[in-house]
Image (cartoon, rainbow, N blue to C red; front, side, top):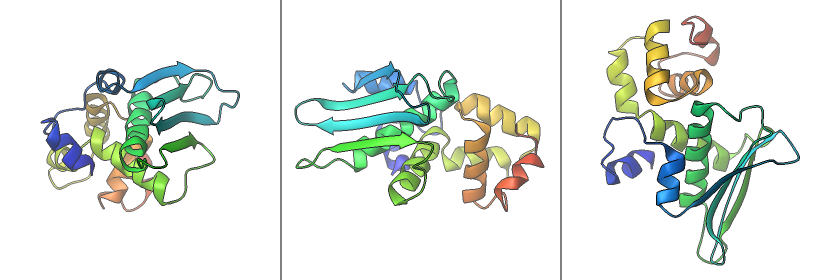
Length: 171
C-alpha cells in the first residue's frame, strides 16, 4: 500500500517529504498537544463533521525527534487512509501499550515502507548487510530511527533477528 501511495505522488525512491507539511497541504488538521499520559504517542480520527485529524503528544518521550515525528505521522496516515469508512469514520490511539494486532502492525509496516522504500534500502545494501556507516546514512537520508531501520531490515530478511542491529552498530 505504501508503495502505491508513493507511486501516485511520484516520490520514486526519494525520501518522503516533511509529512506534517504534506498532511496539512492535504487538509489534514495536524497539531501537537499535551496528553495526560506520556505513553500515548499520537491519535488520528476522521469523521464527516471534523474531517481528518492527527494529534501528536508533546508529553511522549518520543516527542521532539524528527525521525519519530515522520514515523508517527506516516503511521497515523495509514490509519486515516485504510481504517476509516464513510459510515463509521475512524478513531485510533497509538500508544506504547497498543503495539500488537494486525491494525497496528499494518500501520507500522506502511509507515516504514513510506519513509524508506524497499527498493531504496535493497539498492543501498547491494545484497549485503549494512555496516554502521551505511545504516547511519540511510537513517539520516530517509529520516528514520535505528529501531525502525532494524525492524525493516529484519522484515525484509536482511537481518536474522532484531538483536543483529547491535552487530552493525546502528545505534
